[in-house]
Length: 102
Image (cartoon, rainbow, N blue to C red; front, side, top):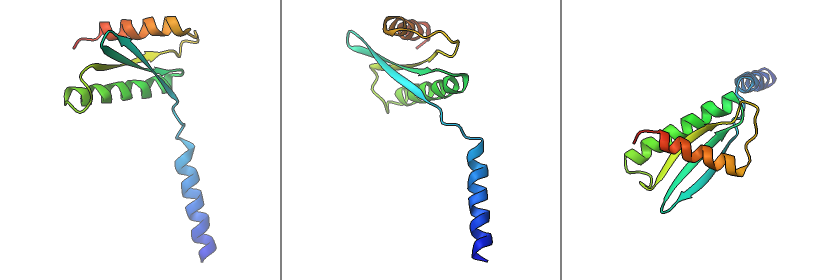
């Protein structure tokens, strides 16, 4: 009986983990003279979707006064296959922050 239960539990855990891929989202902070922008960068489409969720969550918490008001969050899509160097990534984060409406 224990063998059947153990096999069922292991199978259920394995099936639950099959569809779940770990999203790897990098975060970068850019200082803009007293204000900061956190850029969540996704390197694949799934990572970018996760980065968008993280940025939206941060912004929601910021608007609810749960996060610092001087730090804004944006999501950056780097899944196009073009790797950005540090300067290009910084520019992309700043442009995304300025493009968003408050």
